[in-house]
Length: 161
Image (cartoon, rainbow, N blue to C red; front, top):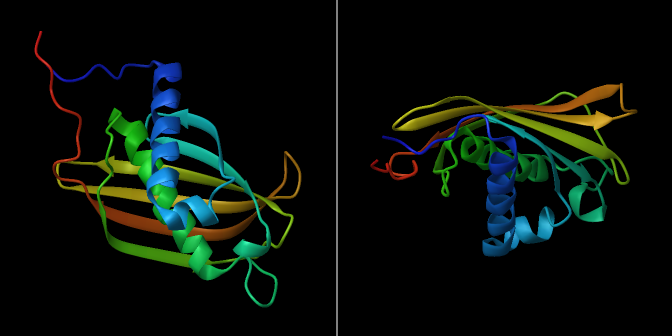
């Protein structure tokens, strides 16, 4: 029998928050660049976070830096994978594609929606959308991404009855 991950939203959210905190604590890059990222919503396979951009997030022209976008994608795809089945570790990057379709700058609030489209025995496929929140009802796309991760051996251990 496998671990029960039925629709227990509070348990799933607490688990993903724990993974988020652990990633920021264990990684200087995540802990520095994404120190203020906030988890706002979790469902099976989906994690939504928000981040207010500051001087460490922007390039010399004042827009969200491409490398920061890639860091956000790398970080949040792990959260989506963790939300899938409550795994503690979320694999290693195999392939990442980012498309920059807009911009956001210092002081802007961005919302990051990461969706694990499929988490299999070996690979996970995640899509990410970074959007600038103009208002609670208006969003402007900033970055669209796809991230493939090697996840063999990261699934939660099976339990017996």
